[in-house]
Length: 299
Image (cartoon, rainbow, N blue to C red; front, side, top):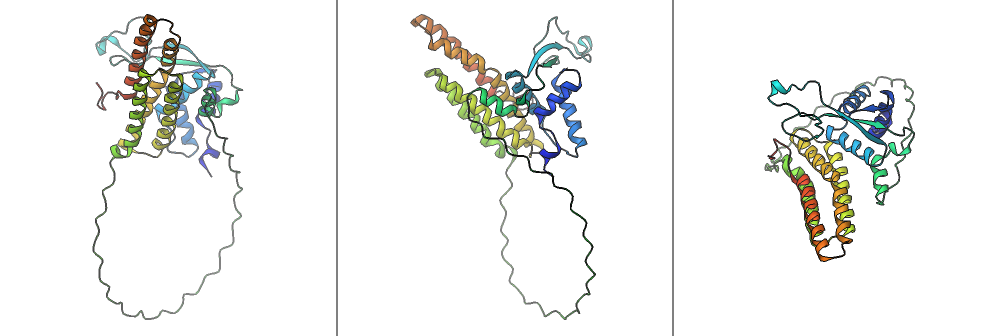
């Protein structure tokens, strides 16, 4: 039976889970619950933590959930670990302290957009979305057939002498591609997106911003699909690309507003000031997209 008949997609599971736990939960708890759910369905592999963060991001952007509050993990001991968490700490990415748990609250469990989060987000941006593939029908188990009657073995015949065949020369097989070589096409796509961001500094345009965001979404979908089949180092490298593209998508609102301010500038002085803000926004998106996590070449 196909996987999508037996298991819920991530968006549908997030909705049902948050309703079951009272309407509020944090991403790591949702991810652990989804892994347990897939295991009960007989599925060994489902999706990564970075992919779950991507779906939480989509649900938040299209208004299906809303950030409620942040709560620091109870396991953190500032004295034992040599650092004391300051009051009001809410930043997620910080190398010397654990991230607080960000709790999200569900807004409308009856919204149909839960089923196709990716497609609903793209429709909100005005991007083309294909129709949803129909689910195959669940076939009833076939009736057991009676075993065929035993066949009598034919009489053995003396095998003719084997003719000597000249051995073919051995051909060395090409070595299997390394994980870095398999991931290289996706990194080249990242390079093209960075080049487009550089063009945006020379010619500010809303169409270029939409093109960059569309490429990031397409890249995320392709890498998530490839990561589901990958193992080991290749899976880690693909998960890093998903994390970087998700962080870059978080900064697209800042980039879009910076471009709008440049286009609406009325005087040269105002335009130069807005261009400085646009360059800073481009630099932030580029760094989020190209900076590797710690332990993978990042600082």
